[in-house]
Image (tube, rainbow, N blue to C red; front, side):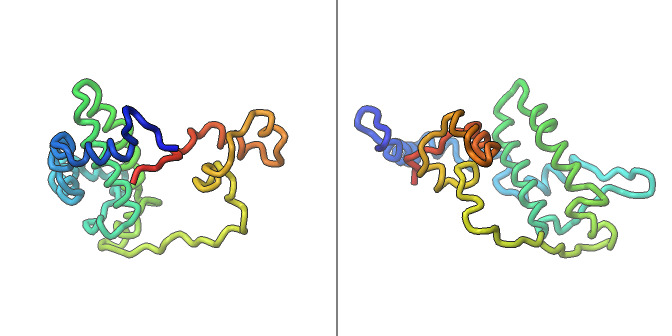
Length: 185
């Protein structure tokens, strides 16, 4: 049953918000960097550098956009930058500590980072994707791993978790907030 407030559903309130001037004012048009390439080229590239440790420089690839992992990490850094810049007290410090430092350590790792092969070759090298195999049927039917299962199952009790054959799955499910039964959209 949809949550209602004064006869309006969450969906109708969201639709009203998206149609309002407030949504327009807080949309991507207020981003300092309106796109990921602008963020990388106009901010990250000039601000960060590639120091050399011993004989091995940190890795980077000028075709950063051709590396899926780099795209995901740089997008997370861009979006978190745009969000955290609004916090005038700790926003940028939090952004550097919790987003830039860990992501850039991984991205620029000359041995295991997504740009490592490019650095060794001196040019962009396409990297193979991780190999995967289909999991056995039913393995991820637990609420801890499936939104469909989480929506279908009643809330677990601690006693039910202890009595289950795989209690660690139940603890994950109990620690995860329940999904919204009325998804917007």
